[in-house]
Amino acid sequence: MESSHAHEPRPSLRLATYNILAGGGDRWPAIEEVVGALNPDVIALQEIEDPEPMMQMAQHLGYQPFFGAAPRFRHQGLLSRIPVAAWRNHQHPEAWPRNSIEVELDLGPLARIPRLSVHTVHLTAAFQRRGRSEPDRLRELGAIRHHAERAPRVPHVIMGDFNSMAPGDGIHATDFLGLLSEWRRSGILDEVGALGSVPASVRAMRWWRDPEVSSSEVSEVARAGIPRLPWLVHPLIEMVPRGEGTDALVAALMPRAAVRSMTAAGYVDCLRVTDPGSESFTCPTYLPAVRIDYIFATADLAKLLAGCRVGAQEDGLVEVAKRASDHFPVLADFDLRPA
Image 1 (cartoon, one colour):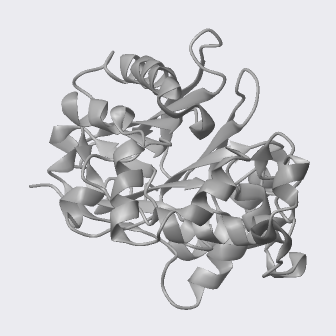
Image 2: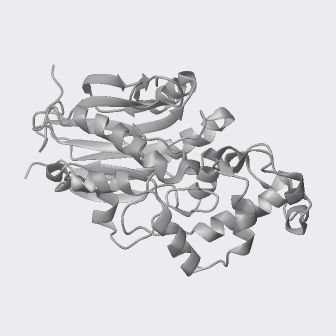
């Protein structure tokens, strides 16, 4: 006998995106705790390396897993509790070294929208290349939008790690760079944080010799998530005054073209609809300073948006999130009840 609930409309839908940092390593229990606490219906995962831990987490939490290999590195995954009508893993080795997963969700005939497609994003970072990496991100995002726009009548989201700031967003640059300098002085960043060896003449400088923190005080998440910067950046940081003026100057130099291209194409930044004035930083978890993770919705879908926020920042869960990754997840809730 058919269940009386078989054709009841789904009242809501929670989507999430989460960069788990460098394959997750031994941090998967913390990652699973974060995902389980936030309880999304669908979550996109960036920086998967070995799919097996993701498959195990999916089994524990009751998700159907989808793994998409990238042409070169930093694969992606997606977990869904919503029936998936179809899915594809898009690879464009000539366009970008990563990939994009596309899934078509079957929300049921009585939902306000019966179908919804989700497209995942992990754009090139390469911050050490400054403006030269902008064309790469725009090319990658253009390929993803091309796939999304092949079905113009199906509402969709494009979500993930854009490695780009939104126009109007601020950044706490000097606090973050100052922390990197402290770690650099102590020698913690000699192996993982800089492009090229530090010259002997620079090592002899006083600021370089005075350790302020010990290696044991820096978490594995912080070590793995430190951006690669030219060694020259660190002595320059020492000469720059910290404060809002410097933050504004650094913010003016940050890449924003990728996010700007999304709004120019008519997509809605879900977080800015819900909370237009908040900083809402998504990374790094150990010292939140910038927002580079987004959920973008088509204009028709954005009308159903019930809320969007940076997740895992509440008491109790935030310490787990700091152990799990250098990114906080982003959540968006949509109201699917019939009008």
